[in-house]
Length: 257
Length: 257
DNA sequence: CTATTATTAGAGTATATACTCTAGGTAGTC
DNA sequence: GACTACCTAGAGTATATACTCTAATAATAG
Image 1 (cartoon, each protein chain N blue to C red):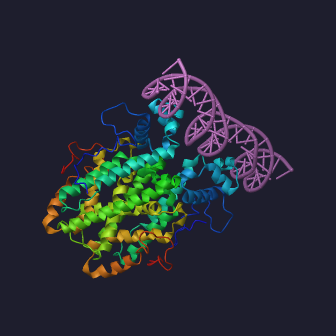
Image 2 (tube, each protein chain N blue to C red):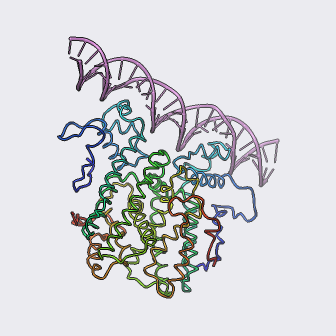
Image 3 (tube, rainbow over the protein chains, first blue to last red):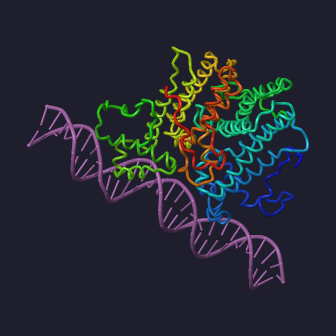
């Protein structure tokens, strides 16, 4: 499908109704979603109450509850955005072989998404326990992601970038990739000594790409080994452990397709 | 209570004072820790209040707060137990070469520990944000674990089980192992369609070993490849996706050291 | 037995949280 | 202007949560 007009994802705006073409004042409903996401990301969902969100927007709680039945509904809608974003990025074009730039794009995109909705994985288990819809949807989302990762591996093999692997191994590898990706943020947040999440940057997050590429090293073909290793090198963490100030100039988008 | 891990570790009893040699009636303080752990594991820390804990033990809140200043202190002490348990299991003997049985033991033990204290990783970020001691200790704990994993890799290479790897790669691989291990539980809980965490079993959890061994496949030496693959096979998930009732007879402890 | 200390019960409190309810404003249409 | 549909304010509520305080009861030491 979509031979991606890349980076041109405008997930916002198609909120529900209103095909917002020209900048019109943002609707309250939309503002609630945006503020909620910001607050969730910054303080964690658990520390953000509906009253906080209303206060942050300088609207009344009543107003907030006019637009959303409850907190779960807000979270659910934010998840739908997240889902849409990732699904968009992980739409693997079947019409042509995959390239290294594609791979870079997938990795960058997935970590971008992870960053934008970073509150989500933090409290995932609680959120799923509190909302059956979300649990069901998330489960399917996970399966789609795993399938996409697996498909990427397959196409990487077809393109001669990695050695082909039996289905079973490919599945297990894909799952490992998923585990590394979804846990990388938590690792960064918990491995840092400093108190808050404030100090975490997108650049650091993308060092997760280094970890993901580490998984692929042994499977690289001789033809591409050096290229991929060079790519990986770009994401190497600067100060592996005591990391604070990330070296500037790092983490620039690499393949822009 | 709490199916604590096997293998002659008696972490309990050395709680603080009292070198409990013979079974004496359990002290209230000890009971609070046990019940808290059970409740946390079952319902998630977020859903368990101090009043719940007291009620569960049929003691008064006042009594609970006589023994612990606050909820954080309870959690912190439970963490110290967890830490002690894992440190105990990951103490790599330097006096002799490592064997495959050792590896099995390490993997089994780590997943046992993960299971016994499974509430911990679920709400990790929140817990660390609420308690600086815990944040600091956990960080050091992580580093010790990473070092242990790395050391295991080193010794596996020395023993000719895997090919030796440069330091840098070994570090990155160790981190990936850690990410897979600590995220496996969350994956299982969230990938299941059914509502609660109730349906999760230790056997399923140990299928994480399958994932960890998947990481090592490409590095295996010809001499040991088959053995390790056979070991891995024992942990293969039965019904990869729709998993519910796990086939009995699976997940028996394999190497008992 | 007495004095002291350790333990416990249980009522109570300050604060927070998700959410409701009523009344009123605004915008657009006829 | 009047009708209607949408939107908003803000006070308020039921419940929960972490934690405190007092007084009483066991346990122990001298």
